[in-house]
Image 1 (cartoon, helix red, strand yellow):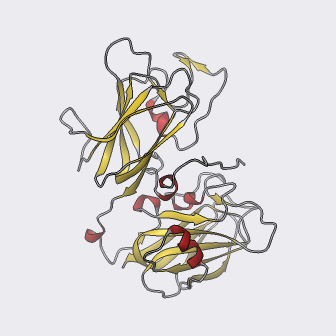
Image 2 (cartoon, helix red, strand yellow):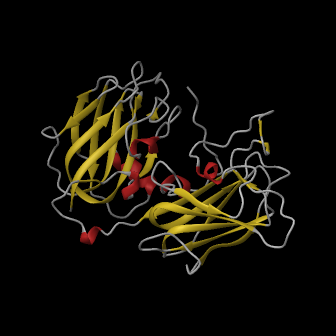
Image 3 (cartoon, one colour):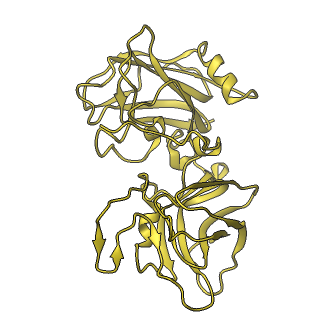
Length: 336
C-alpha cells in the first residue's frame, strides 16, 4: 500500500477542480509533431511520473512522459489532446518531473471549442496560457483567468524535449437547463462537476477517488484514512455539481476487506455564501441525510428508503466510523 503524497506547494485549484486531462474520465492525446523518445499518451497518466534507472527501449532511455527527439530544424513541437469534456480551465500543471537535461525551456497552451469532430487545419486556436519558462524536474502551476470553455488543447513546447505530466484543472460544463428534471444524475460525480471541499485525512488514498467513474480497480483506487488511534471519526465534504434532491445513495467498499469502515453516515445542507473553510465548520451541524448504516467489506451498499427528505441540497458531509477505506460514493438525485 502506497502512502498518497500531494505537493504541499500545489495551489487551491488542484484540490477544488477535476483534472479534465485524466484518461479515466475520457481524455486522450490525439496527435503530436513528434514522440520519438516517449509516447505522448504517457503525459496524461494519472499516476505521478516515475524514473526507472537502467530502463531503455529501442529508441533510447525510457522516460515517463511525452518526449520528442532533438530538433535540428526551425520550429517547435506540439501535442493535441481532447479533454474528458468541455470545461472552463482554472489552472494547469506543467510537470517536468525526472526531465533534467532534456526538458523544454518554454511552453504555451492553446484551446479550441468544438461542438463535434476533432481539430483540423481550419481549427481556430485561442491562447490559454502564453509562453512561460520551464525548469527541469519541477511542477509549474499556472492559474488561468478565462470564462471560455474548451474541448481540446494544444500544448506547445519550445523547441523540443520532454514533459512528464500535463494536468488541466477545470470546471466541467453541463447544460443543466436542458436536462430532464425527472432523470436521476450522480451530482457528485467528478465528470459532472462534483468536487471535494475538504477532508480530515487521506493518508492512504485521496478523497477525490470517491467521485471517479466506474468501480475501483484495486484498494489503492479509493479514499482511505490512516488507522485512528483517538476518539472521533473521519469525514470528507463534497460539493454537488448542481442543487439536487437525493433519491438514491451508493456506498461502495470495493476491494476494502480488512480496512473498511464499520459504519457510515451522511449529513447534508443547502449552502450559500461563506468559504470552504467556513463550510467545514458549519458541516458539523448539518441535518442527517442518511442515518448511520453498517458497512460490509468489498460490497456495494444501496440506500433509498433510509434517506431523509431534506429537500434540495448543495453539499454533503460523508462520515465514516471510525476510519478506513471506501472506493466510490454515488448520490443519485433529481435536479432542484
